[in-house]
Length: 533
Image (cartoon, rainbow, N blue to C red):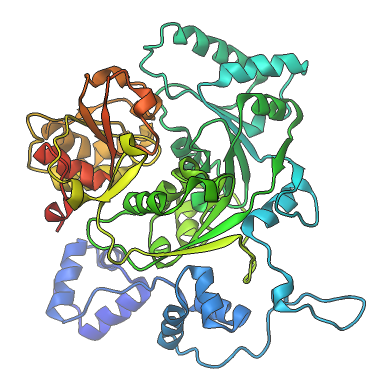
């Protein structure tokens, strides 16, 4: 077959964009189209991160680079560059109606500063049925979803004491059996049996038995969490779902029983702290390193029972799984909730898993925050935390060389497909150190199957890793007997494991999956940057 003319190839590329689709037109492999392009000196089609329509929409809405850029999570100059690229130079002729706030008693228009509500205040006002709420106000809200895990039997006992024969709405209750998959707690099988019986009696459809994985990975994968929904849960990783713009918070089993019975719960409106993460992470630095730095810089008493809203260039470039690391770890540094407002990244992610419609809530342009914190991660290096020293966090180079006996990659902040891919890229073709064990717990059944399909599991096992069933793993203490006295463990978990191990005097370190993989190769804490291309 003759090579098409350059003009013809350019027209097809403009129409179909990818080599794969052009190849389908000719009925040839996509690699042949790539070869044709190289012969005609035609580069690969470049997809714009933000469409012309999106930039125009925001420009017409705000008419200000800084404000429009904040909507996308980028800087004002960054948005201006996108405008210049698309040739958008003129100021918008008029503001869109959503910018106008009219006083029907006259022609007075409220000033831009008159509305200064945060995401939390807007969402809680909507869920409570009130026009507005104030920080510190105690309100009654109706959750969109109530998630319980292995403490479900406690909730069932409390629910029966309420005297209600049926739960308020069985379509809004999710029960996930996760932490005790290994059945080392003696009579846990009997507990699970009673939970299953209750589920059948109440006809609860969203029930996920053992082996499905981490609760907040499952609810995301199954499309149960959508932007601007209010979720209550009994697990300490409830803040995870803020990664796609939902409000999610942790409650006690007793409070959950009340929700099951009445469909409502009393919540105190938290104050909000705005966290702006500027700069772009360098090679070897990931969301885990950023949240460890935040845990070092922030004081628990300063953010206790407060909500965190994340912004900045670093956040806008993160995938949803990376964002989930920021939000899932926030509760453990004191936050009541953590939110990354809905944006294009969230939209692309949700398009793949659900067709359900939703209406995202965004904070006002000049929202009033209790405090605003800015950090620059441009020069941040991989971080390691030692849990035995009041969560002491140091750059990896300061603790490099410290011998590690066991490494565990699991928990709500890791074990996802991109984490496994990162570990494989470092370990592929190599063996872990002979004096170190590396245990890997996939985040979910779907993650496990996808990793098998991509060949990751074969590669990890070939490198000497031990694979366990999907779930929280040692984050819940399920594998606590696997660490001997005075041994050192490095984990990617987001929670304090000191109380979850039977080992005497354990030294426990936290790091990113990349640092964990590098450490596995050397048998001691190691900098991952030398293994990343």
